[in-house]
Image 1 (tube, rainbow, N blue to C red):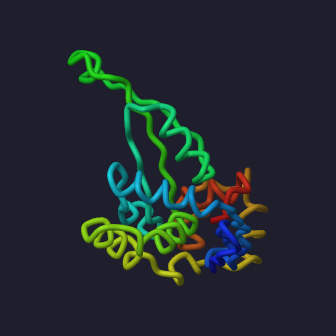
Image 2 (cartoon, rainbow, N blue to C red):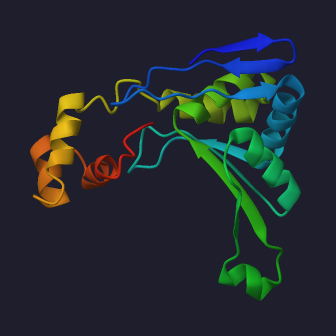
Length: 182
């Protein structure tokens, strides 16, 4: 994905996804919004590698008690905020927290775009997350194999299809639900 500055707006162009299908990511953000988001994430955000079950999914996360701030960040990231309150928070009388996270290629490109605006510690987090990303990761099945997997829905168990194609059963479920996009 490439980004272009047009006036005060940053445009992200469509990118050929490294997985199976074309991934159409187009985000438009005002320069002032980008700077606001970068400042917020510098202070309150985190940039991480993908977890072991999704190693090629770098993540941007934000968690705060200010619902309006998280809602604005979520809107800029093209996501919906969610709230979380666990038993410990309730017992301690702590405020409810609001969260937003973004992962995958869109998170990666936002990281690359805001990296020059970040401090040393956040740049190191971003560098680590970017380094964990492999554009060739996930090039495991072809379009024909996706069609074959879809035809096996209801005829074989997901775990058996996964073994046959050397993929995870969760990826089989995504294909069956037409969610095998980046």
